[in-house]
Length: 80
Image (tube, rainbow, N blue to C red):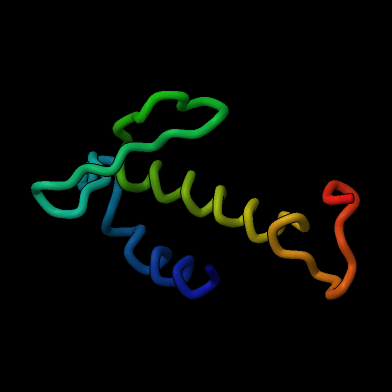
């Protein structure tokens, strides 16, 4: 996560709302954002918007004790 965040930081000055209006993987692939909160249907976003949402989502997952517990051998309160 940290390395990807650093790499993204280096290109974010060049990939702006104007220069990257669509999150795509070449001319044939467009990535759309969907989540349980604001974007309930797949939504086309600019690359910076998409990446910001993605990095925020990943950080929440990484910090979720139910997915990645920090204390080995202890189960979380929710899994009991």
